[in-house]
Length: 295
Image (cartoon, rainbow, N blue to C red; front, side, top):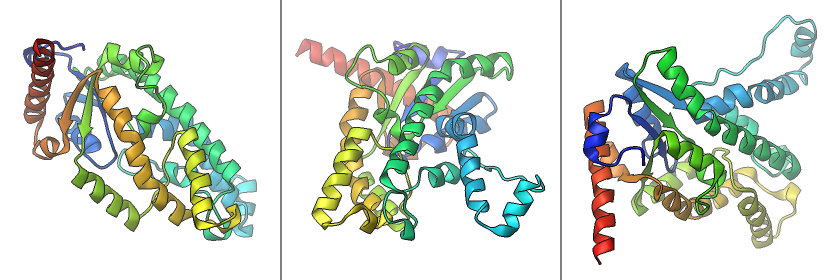
């Protein structure tokens, strides 16, 4: 790790962290809080994906739908209107809408082949955005003169890397430059995330092998062909399984860094509290490793 002790972290004038874990546990909350202090640069992986790497795909999808409306078609063909994505750190709906959900097109779903193509586009974009992190660290220092840097990763980071490979190129690049911080949720958090998702199911990225198995298992269990699949029902069915699939992958990633709990994160109100939390977690990791060696 780039900080050996809690005191190293507290005394550093160039703090760099990458937050990872399930969506909804506080990554963006912490990142926004740190950015508001005017000492931290907030690099959002999802924002980078939706602007730099998939912005054109998202806008073209909007235009494709607009071309189905005669009034808008005429305006588009004459360059009389502009259609673009208004994606922000706090509103990633344009990206989610583009990813879509597989299933019956009459219920708003996508053909599975189209859905998988968009999933693969997201995978490539997420890897590229993660590998852009060192570049943004440099930008944050040279252009904005901000001493500290927080990378707000997407919940799917564990799906685009191999956590068990010590030479994984993405993770190796990240840990050379940042402290990896896993925000770990409890079973209660997982249950709440599932309930929240059930109320408002949203598209998300899945590992291809996991998704292929889920798509087949769901249709076999329900006795449905592709055109009969309710897109919302499928992603609800898949979500809890995806969380269980991701948990050991997050845990493996955390061996490269430190772990804090969602309960600890919920108590943080300012950057000083965040610094103290990270320092405790670094020392806690050191103590745990010492205890294991002595045992």
